[in-house]
Image (cartoon, rainbow, N blue to C red):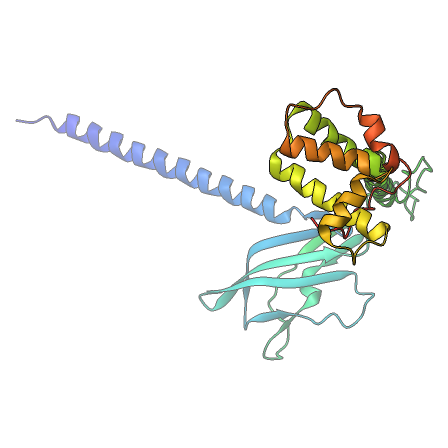
Length: 292
């Protein structure tokens, strides 16, 4: 058989445990409520001009909206960020900005959408604080200091543009000088007299580098030139050639050309200066237009 005393002790022990648990749970709920009440009692502080926010505020009654900011002197600018249904009430997320220091109630800047009276709305206190020292109503005067050089980028553009133009002008200048010097060198190398133009041909003939067709072409050119110069265009060709070979100026080079053409290797030493003496004072283009 079971002992009645032991059963009674167990019942009393179980009841005591439950009673102790209920007391501890109640104490924890009371503590949470005190913490929540303390948090609700703490008024948020926000500096002037800095936005603040109050989230998840449950307000009974019809839906609210922010009152219009018709007056620019209104110390609080309020905006409803979000609205959520909450049973017979609504839950709000609010944003505000204080334009002057002091304590304010955000409720004063709300109204019912349906125009009904603003009853049953709890106080929503906020505090706007200033960051200036007590008694100071204006910011400190800025300290004067060295300022950077104005127009730095513009000055840089001028410098870079000047360098670019100077480089371009130098390129044009030296390019022009190079072309001018090349033209001058070519002009200096260009034969000035007919003797200078004929000298390479005579030297080539003496050295045997001039071919028979080249010698024949040179002979025909000289004959045409002297016939025109001595006004012998109307004379018969054979008579003209005999007369030219006997001529004091035309004869020496024509006689030597005839030897190179028809009796190669039979001529004695040749003096180029003597052959070209009649052509020293003639322009280099004197043979232009003569038959080739």
